[in-house]
Amino acid sequence: MIRSFIQNPNYEATLDRIGKIFAAIGIVALSAATIDQIGPEGKIVIAIVLVSIWVTFCLEFLLRLFARSKDGPRYPLSIAGACDAMAVAFPAIGFTAGLDWRDVALLCGIWAVKFARGTNALTLLQRVLVNESRHLIGVMWIFIMVLFGAALLAHVLERETLPEAFGSVPVALWWAVTTLTTTGYGDAVPTSFGGRLLSGVVMTAGIGVFALWAGILAAGFAKEVRRNEFLRNWELVARVPLFAKLGAKELADIVGVLRARRSSAGSIICREGDPGEQMYFIVEGEALVSTVQPIRLGPGEHFGELALITGKPRTATVIATTAVSLLVLDISDYRVLVAHSPEMSSAINSEANRRLAALGASSTTDQNR
Ligand code: CMP
Image (cartoon, rainbow, N blue to C red; front, side, top):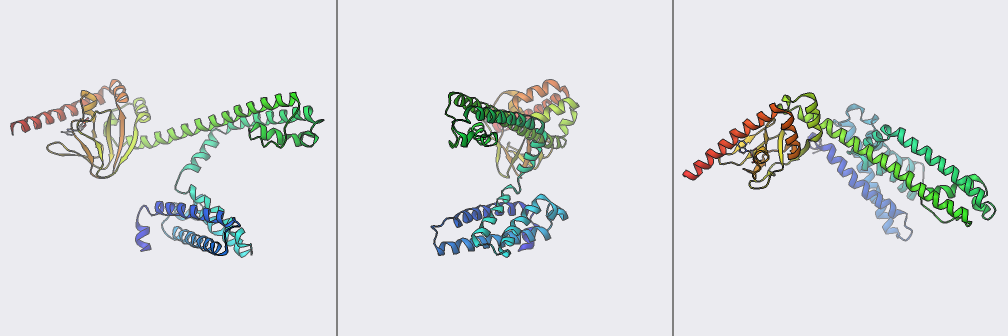
């Protein structure tokens, strides 16, 4: 059974999914372990749940270690391998060190790392932080400058009236941090007019600084996501011969506007009679055009262009007969593309004319029947 499981090419994705579910259950259980009101029976159930999850994670680690992991022989040295090892080792170390079972349960909090498994979120975050580090650090200096200035001024304005909260610059820094981050615990509150005025300025500055950070990160994420999409589309576009007719610039432009899409076997990609706003290029898989004489289209071929050219509804329903990887081109980008590449335009048009002629012939045959 294990052998047939690991022979499935998607077995690692399945393990990732199971790991996330178990980690979520584990985190709920360890949180429950900290509730004093839960009686002894409840605690036994929690302990059983935690031990079962730990055993599962041990088995998962061994399976990935000895099976053909996608990280290859470097799995134990990879970040994913280190996370899996920590998920097993932390509670084990706590237990062997003789910690109270509730503290061992808290060490199971490390299981949260399983949530990052199988996603590229951490790699993406790391890349954004590295790419945007210059701007992020720049804003950090502004933050430090405002923070220190605020603490200094608050100390000057409030040291007489509230010495316990503003008696020295280091102590006033606590007020500055809670105010600049707009957290405002309320444990240190300036009472003088100048102090309150300063609070208002610091709070407003805080919003500005965090908005800057958020803006830099959001722009960095968007840039990185677009770059990833561009690279993936580039790879896919190379597999469609029609695009070989494009020059380097047009190719780069088209790669930027194409969207990759996957359709599962049996799904309808476009339906006869619907308005058409996109055309499709098949990268992988097969689709069936359900005309009178159904036509199979495979990798490198395209469909959905007739509605864009004629402005009329879809002439046929197109169904994915296998899982299909597609590149989707919107009508506005299609117009730009054909305007800039006469060769591609004529290739699409001549195929469209042939298809229209075939459709005309089949509808004439239908009428004659
Ligand atoms: P459209 O009419 O936009 O949507 C259905 C698509 O099926 C159509 O564009 C063509 O791309 C495709 N199609 C229709 N008839 C044929 C045919 N005879 N051969 C290949 N593809 C076709």
